[in-house]
Image (cartoon, rainbow, N blue to C red; front, top):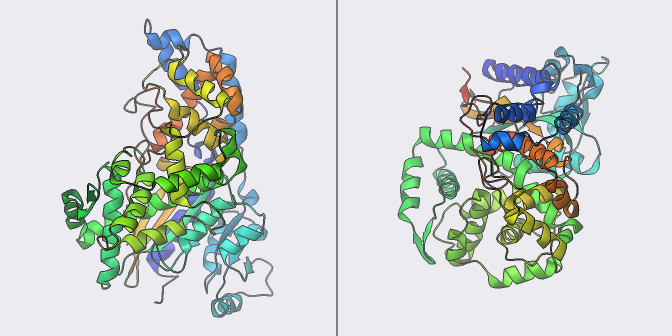
Length: 513
């Protein structure tokens, strides 16, 4: 299929996303974060103004010097950059000059712009399109972008992956996204721009596979199930969800949201959990070798009751349910192969020994107290569940706060900044395209504030330390609360409906004509 790279709609979207990406990384950089610099202080002052309340009494226990220290940490993590300091990469295609001109017109130095092309014929076209006697041009490298991420320790502020295929395809654009996070090639804060093709509505078998996969993901988000008990019978809820999706307009809208969700899931969930469970760091928490725990978990298998017990972990439920269906009822769901392919794409370059289902099940069992912990970890966990030093504020603190802090401190997820992202859709010739600009932030001002696992109990006994952390974490929770429930579930200290502390939303996808 041929694509237009200079169509007016394409040019508009290219201009919009590159301009905004550069602005977010430079003049708007103070807003390029999950938690603004004033957030902890704003929560603190909000509680102080609630005179004669328990929240006010607790806030008064905070030494303000801790808040100032956190603000320094946040400023240092976000930093400042000028356009000429930014590093950029993108897929070259046959016309690499289009994106190049947009970046250089925004002040990015030509020497800091990289482009990649793996296809020999397209690479030749790309070279031929340049005036090689001119100094200003991108570096066009004949390799795939994911191979570059794997083999070259270069980091970028803006990465633009413009695919000519749908989200789950043999072109592996989503795998390239996962590889970006696997090898940690995006700076923090950093911008990822993706452009995926829409669905081919003339290919009904492909459409039905996507309908099935998207319906099942939505069902898992709602805590429902696709099957009845352990029998190969599709649930009524599942049948109704498929029917509601099976129109072009509804499916295209849901597909656009699915694209955004899976790109974010690669950065926030799949790659970090693969990294952590496959690392020696997991031994910090558990008493037995990880291999023994995984083998025990595999020996017990999956049951319908186990799947239905996963209430608030959408990603975990979705892929473990898929593993269950593959074993029990493989012919009942058209999208099983599509979901398996999605899982492989979200795993990056597949260099991990333990795969996504094994890692998800292990971490879920860990949080459900089904895995024996080291003695010192158990003592720290008891502090979280029973200590009078853990004032509730809005949500009651639970063990997940402990595990998520420890795991994410070492797994290095990148969190999406929903409100600063932008989403577009347009038609290139007859093909609908879905463009996402997503801002990512490592939030090291959250994770680096805390000491290591064996120091957490002592740190949390210091209320200034603890409350500063929890107030900052509340800002991160507000970014994820509408879209993700894998981490920091029930981590809020202040209502998401209060001005200044409201939950973030991704903007609706905008039509470009």
